[in-house]
Amino acid sequence: MSTDTREKILQAAFDVLSREGYENTSIKQIAEEGGVAQGLVHYYFKSKQRLVMEVLQFVCQKIELGDQGEAGALAAFEDTKQKIREDRGSNALLVQLIGISLHDPEIGAGIRDFVRGQRGRVEDIARQVFAERELDPTAARGIAGAVWGAVLGIIIQSLVEPEFNADEAIDALAAMSLSAVYPADQSA
Image 1 (tube, helix red, strand yellow):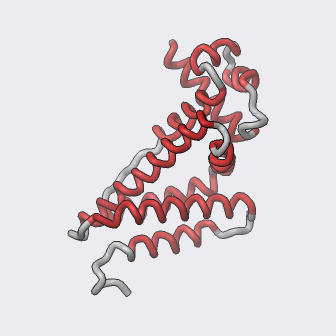
Image 2 (image 1 turned 180 degrees about the horizontal axis):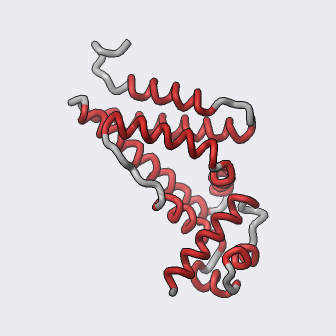
């Protein structure tokens, strides 16, 4: 029962945070959304900051990597396009939490871990592409940082400018990043 209750609270927190944003969300709202007593939210998570960090981890656990190599990279870019189109609330929450993390040490530590984890996943995919092409994977970390930063920038642009074509930007990013993983004599 406790795992079910905990997951119910995490899902409710994700829903409310995505809809209302960090500043406008209360523990009371989360409890109401989840159909649990407010005390249970405090019991499982102790603070709003800890709950938010758990929500980020909860969301990340639902993200699965499928194919490997170039096919995996292309699938990840397609998945990113879909998430930008369909998860506006989640994207807005992430951007808001990044801003809050600059002034809140607990949120800051969680966001830092989140960013490192996500960038690490991109680096893993880049390393797979390098291995598939039998190339030295030394640049995988730099490519991962550039790709993750670019995706974040595309997310921000899509949030502040609804007519911005995020799909087009992600397609260009995919082409640029995959072309960076060729030996110098094969690149255009």
